[in-house]
Amino acid sequence: MAAALSPSRASDFMQCPLLYRFRVVDRLPERPSPAALRGTLVHAVLESLFDLPAEQRTQQAALELLRPQWERVLAERPEAAQLFGAGALGGDRFDGGVSGVVGGNAGGTGGGEAGKLEAGEPGAERPGAGDPGAERPGAETDLDGWLASASELIGRWFALEDPTRLEPADRELYVETTLDDGLVLRGYVDRLDVAADGRLRVVDYKTGKAPSEAFEAKALFQMKFYALVLWRTRGRLPTMLQLVYLGNGEVLRYEPDEQELLGVERKVRALWDAIVLAAETGDWRPSPSRLCTWCDHHALCPAKGGTPPPIPEDALERVLGLKPATTDAMSRDGAIA
Image 1 (cartoon, rainbow, N blue to C red):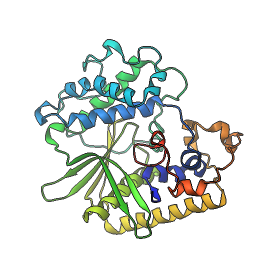
Image 2 (cartoon, rainbow, N blue to C red; image 1 turned 45 degrees about the vertical axis):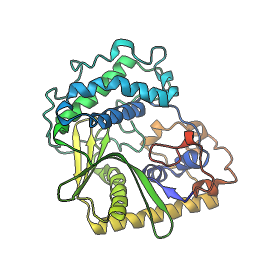
Image 3 (cartoon, helix red, strand yellow; image 1 turned 180 degrees about the vertical axis):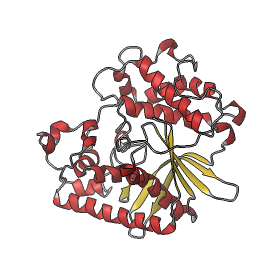
Image 4 (cartoon, one colour; image 1 turned 30 degrees about the horizontal axis):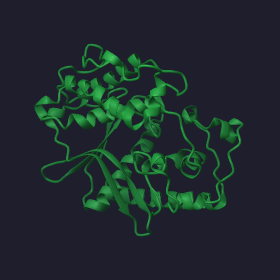
């Protein structure tokens, strides 16, 4: 198994080296989060919607996908049921109705334009982070309210895009490339649109709110990472990177250039060197920030008065991928969770 880096794990290290250690080296479990789970469900619905013929991709049809997709998520992650207590399947809560959807466009006309980005938290290294309404794990969540919030996000998407006019080339596309030093870059692209002339548009759905200008660059790092991988594998520079923020109905669009992606490649190489150095020296220092609010590991964090566990003897091997994690410890983007 080759040394590999995904945008999620790269963001973990940039956010907090100790968080990267807990996830990649110690492989500590984390409690399911209602906000992260909602993101998983909404992504699944939007992906599945494109299995339907174009004329059938209505908001009503999307809402009717909630129940089967929720059942699939529960089958894959049964521990998620603990968030809702008894009746996690929801009984008759999945009626497919749109009457409770707030801020959506029941007509599904799409084509909404993004306005100026509003101030937001530095979003989305962990699903739900940066969303002021995101629930913290721990307390039991009201399933009705949670499902209503998922419906609201789906409805808002129809105000931003018209799925009857879209034919994605790929959905949940696994991308991977190997740099000349042997480092593998990989991840999953939510949606890849390819124009008739071959132009590429990379689309990512975010269920949180759009970031403020101060955090735009951080939000775009993931997209530039994907653009770099696609450029290396397809030989064509993506024309447009598009982040769709369903939390407040904003769309962030960015047109990368070749020199910029070469800079991203240099940054990723330097980041990987820093990760390897931390593994070799055992220097996994915490980096406190507002994002600590959403971290599960306060009891083990020196910045919070905790004590980390002893560093595993095979820490470097785990970072380098020489000792792969179990299937259960693998994340959606193919990196060690």
